[in-house]
Image 1: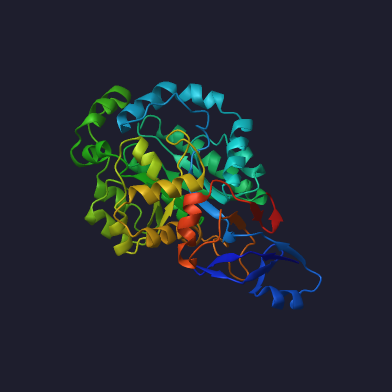
Image 2: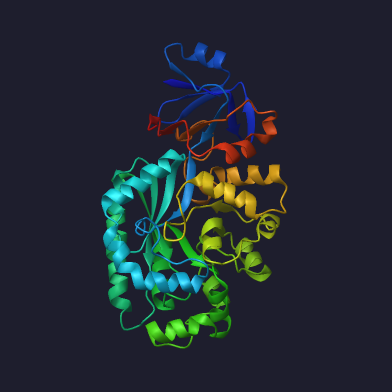
Length: 406
């Protein structure tokens, strides 16, 4: 048994002081340091240091590890400019991204307190890395494929990857399924994949309404996507509509990623059907996609997470960088309330969305902890979330399942 003794603790989505935590692989008891010492006289006491804040480990729900080799290859500024550069450079980037590189970015995520993440896997190449990394990994096997001539081959490859991820559960992998997008997956294959997810109780993710070009294509079959699909897929018609795509997920709660181009109708539907959203503010800015309407998301009580996306559309996988960016782009929000909401979006909210036994400092939850040190004594408990986002780049200590990683 060990006892963590911080100055401040994030508990029940708020900040308190003079509370300590006794734990082994799970949280055993939360009380004052004096009472915990009396209860566990032989426990090791870990004093977290001056101005320390104890958080549950952070959760990054949406990461693409396979493109971690990108730095200055892909082109930003607009979605189509980026997408065409992905097509041109995909093989080069994939071949440059070996296990050592993916292990490095997993370690970088650890340094910013990420104890669990969702890996969106198009090819399955990062499975070995995800098995070895200390973090818990929700492994989203991504389905992509539009051309009916290749659907069976692509779907069979998808099934092989799903099977491999299921066999890796003994190494901490949580198998899951990702649908790439409404414009890149044939409805026949999509429906099959959702049946598998439902039968195996697997989580589902899907890119949706990310760019203005996607919305225009799905609504009218026009715009910049028209030339793209003519060139690469020899088609001039979208395979589905916005409403049709949403309806496929009616019985399978889904974590829709981006949603920057969602209108009131879609947001209300998502709320009604119990779906959730992954918000990736820097990726959306880099690709010229706009920003999530966080006001309506809050008003409609839609659960959401803040996630980094991958290095194909971001400059780091540091969750503090992402939280800071979210704080800046939603500039009409009350700063203190928004900071608290953002902290919950990388702790309790994603844990609830994906049914993880973490994300909260609560008895019987997994002992996943991130400890940060503020540069000075906070003037108000209510402002600690804001101070954390403003002044933190790396955690001081990190525990996963009770084991100290940093």
